[in-house]
Structure formats: structure tokens, C-alpha cells
Image 1 (cartoon, rainbow, N blue to C red):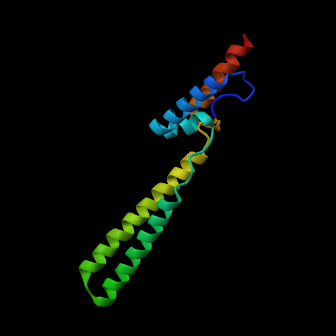
Image 2: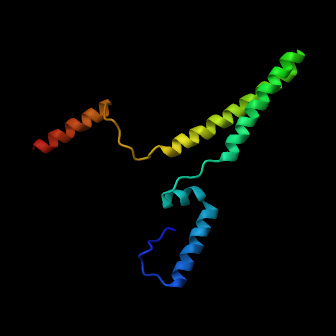
Image 3: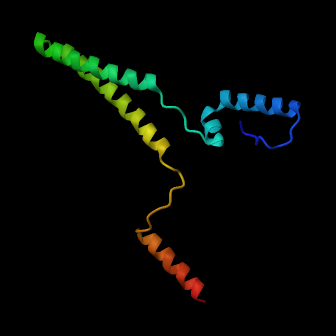
Length: 125
């Protein structure tokens, strides 16, 4: 819930806030999870689908090699490639959501050094 539990709200106001929260969750779940401070759950089904496509594609590639049918191998390669792309995109989404959007920078770049010198110059005066 977005409201503080210590707030003195009437039951009607709490119901209205719950309805607004439910509407926000249905309209824009990404914004709702950002506002609530919780991470979006990892899509387990998407990961399983990606691994399944990758395994199916590899099996099809080997089947095409054994049967010496190039077309089947090409199809298997495309299926395995799509599974790999899906897996990489889901892992990339997990890594991206785990990173803090406001993490401080190291400060080793030219602009950071110039900004530091400017700040030091302004504090000396």
C-alpha cells in the first residue's frame, strides 16, 4: 500500500486509496512497483520458455546433423537462437532491475575531475 499506516484516515478514504492503487496496478504495473519500492518479480515462465527453446533448438540441430538434413539444422539453429536471445533479454532485465538507478559514480572521468576542481575553487573564495 502506498499510504502510511500511521495516517489517520477514515475507512472511506482507505477504500478510495485501495481502489486507486488497484487501478494504478492494472494501468501501469511498472510505475506502481517503482512507487511502492518493490522490485518487479522475475518471470520464471519466461526463463523456462527460453531454456526450453534453447534445448529444443540444440536437439533439432543435432537431429539435423545425424539425419544429414541441412534444412532441419537451420530450423534448429533459429529456434536455439531465439531461445538464447530470450534468455539473455530476461537476464538483462534482472540485472537492470537489480542496479540502483541512483548509484554514485566513481568520479574518474574528465568532467568529474573538472567539476571537483570547480567546486574546490568556489569553496576557497
